[in-house]
Length: 75
Image (cartoon, rainbow, N blue to C red; front, side, top):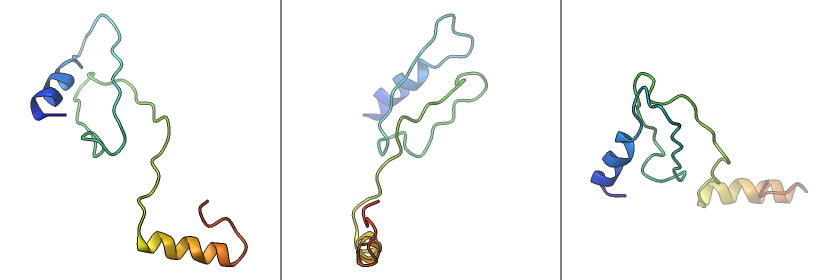
């Protein structure tokens, strides 16, 4: 999402709107660090699913350890 598109998206969340507005964002996208919508511009948030951890060397060590003691290392 370009910066202009992001600004247009955020401008839609106005305080005192007569109708409901629902916005969707992808975890890990431009809004992953949070958005500051002051006042009554945002009344609720629903997180559908938490993100999966990134693949990396440290995660593989932890996974391998739990696999070696008979557990599901991925879980």
